[in-house]
Image (cartoon, rainbow, N blue to C red; front, side):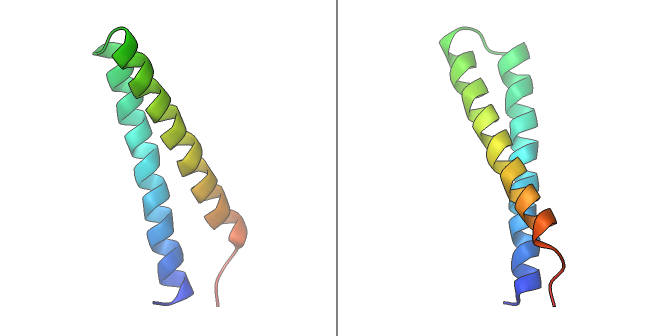
Amino acid sequence: MSESMLNMWISFAGMGLLLLAIGLILLSRYKLKGFLSVVVSLLAYISLIFGAIIILYIVFSGPTA
């Protein structure tokens, strides 16, 4: 697998984590209460941070040959 294809799949994983974070934040704010809401919200924010780091890495790594 070439470096370009690997970067594509890594960026898809980052975008997936960002979408997962959106869904979990909405779930924890509007559907859940109490301790479960805190756990889901924490998982959502961890996914948001990892997804953002992945996307920033892909963007700043520049074009591939």
